[in-house]
Image (cartoon, rainbow, N blue to C red; front, side, top):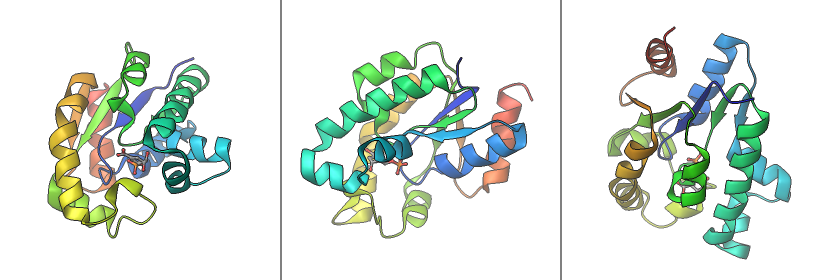
Length: 167
Ligand code: S3P
């Protein structure tokens, strides 16, 4: 079993929204590894970061990605930093992975105050800029396809993903 598509990209790129939309269109289940980690731990991600640190979160996230890739045959959305972990990147080899591209302005608009996102504490705009600069090359290296999301609705983004994947 293998997801039909895996969505990666920064916070505010619309992974969860677009994943839900594609899954509805295709009549398949949707899964989100942030949600899987929280459910497995019985704690929110921000609590895991504060209590145990980011490195521990990445381990839990890698395990959640591994399980989801093995068990899930619908649409899978990963957390924005999942592909920073080498083990997680290796797990994605051979899967169809779409990078949702987003520029700074749209990411800041979509993330709002950054509530519940521990990596955005402080100055949201400056933090998002730093994360986009650092991570864009990693997303590009991992993805088999990419889609620009700026100024586009979830429906338009889903249309392009469907076209890329051959309808
Ligand atoms: C993170 C993104 C979040 C979540 C965690 C860390 C990141 O997921 O996994 O707060 O490192 O970019 P979303 O991209 O779904 O917000």
